[in-house]
Image (cartoon, rainbow, N blue to C red; front, side):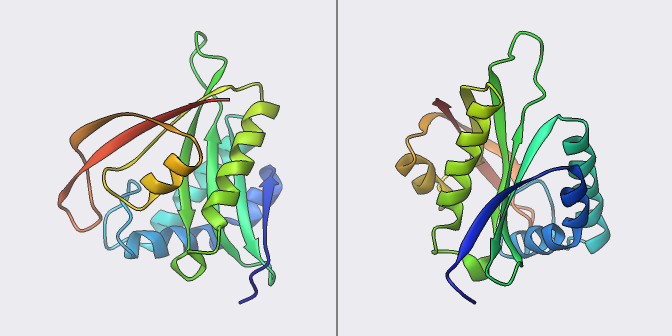
Length: 175
């Protein structure tokens, strides 16, 4: 696999066309232990249905979807910006499902995705971003290096894919 990675914002049609590749990334992350809303075993149909819903949400302009592709055009990472917020929060968005396939980790993919999601937020008029991640997980270092502010922890917030409880740490960033 080449080290060339490109990050793209995809519209509704491309999002729908990417569902299988996105399902591959999601399944790999969950199988690797990521607590991202899914439990093991994660059926492919469940992963595909999730991404179908994301593609439809992109079509309704409720979220922005970014993908990272390698030189062969294989999707190796993704992140979403949920822009649909309540009326009193038009300036805010949630960063969601920052996923990098295990074979593409430690190559700056997550860092590039986070930089692009911040650019997309500004283009969408969003200047307050919020995200959450597993307390004590590898992603915490990424967010700290990218200038995100740790807001707080919630113990036993979610489950790991294998069923044990995990805490969640919330972060925010003012752009």
